[in-house]
Figure 1 (cartoon, rainbow, N blue to C red):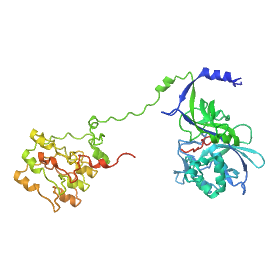
Figure 2: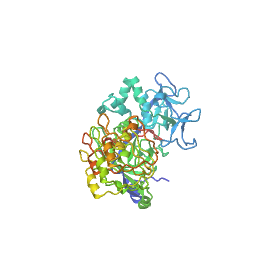
Figure 3: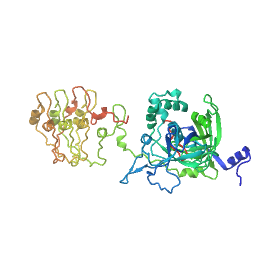
Figure 4: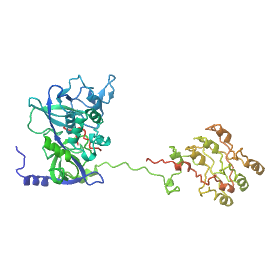
Length: 540
């Protein structure tokens, strides 16, 4: 039964009656990308000779794909791991183009035929099929079978990047001429494309067109190769301005085309390779096309697009961010969290710390006497300064600290101006963040440091080293690169600091915020035209 329409009006009425057009493109884009391909016709021989010295290989017996069964219809084109098995049954990468052209497959009797020019073989591998005219005139039809598992690398890109051919002079004929004039350097350029395609024989006839991945012969000007997200046989209406008549001008192109082939370089919903036929003329048209185009996919009217859309998978929802971390801003207006110093060092504070006990109140008399512990440069040292300067850190799991005591109104006023020269408040954790470390996540319950008598305080205030730097209880340990025990018994808590402690500044007047030390570090994370293989061709 002949299902062909008798005229174009009948065909048009059929598609309008049974299909609805749906515009498709990548998310956020309008146009897709169009390229062209064809079937090369080259001279060849059944036997090697000085003239015919380039082998065309069939699939090697040791080429395997993970999970592939030889009984399958076709060798996997993409999406699986391809390689070869070692004596230990380990799957390793297969030989690349450089190794194969150097003779890695010699002696395995894989040769289908022999060609004159390595560029002819490269063209056949890019296009995915060929007609090899043997010495006696017999046409040998060969088509894509498999590849060695490497992604296609653009020869054009390599030639431009190595300043071998100017971009404005790039063409198929220009590449052919250059490779013929520079055979040794041409081999190195070809080796940059590690992908290698193997073929199988499909017939000994000059009649008809090559068979595409769908299993039916392609139609020049009507068949396209697409990504496998589409079903074979899907009709597309494609609109573009293409240089079909000549390379100097483009003409309007609007045509109904059918998806009948594929290629590993064809990725995305609006990406197609247009088949133009066999021979040099078709090759010239295909070589000129790399243009944007609009795609309308014709969908059967009985398909409910709304219902189908409900089955679309949704992206994973973003994790919730604690509200307490949102409103804290740094000097640049960015909102770092309470753990900013730890994050900058690649650390993370505990998500569920034990509720700290309130810090005991400090007497005003105690606060005044601790206020001016400074080194020779005017930097105030803390109890942990020595340990943190040596890159050490406090224990990770001390018991829950005693909570900070409530402060009297008179005490609060004296603490308000605890700022450095730039007005940034310093905190007890400054030293820890400077070294990129973070304080321990679950500090042990710190017993309160006993109050000191006024007479004792005076004697401790001015303990300084030879350079005028105030020493802290941990200074000796840190000078020797020692570190206090990570899990000490609950230490006595530090006494309340007086309001006078507010004006601790460093010599340069810079503020040391609780987690400001690492704020200066930058912790932010600062296509060629390759056409890999397709079941019937290499995609453009």
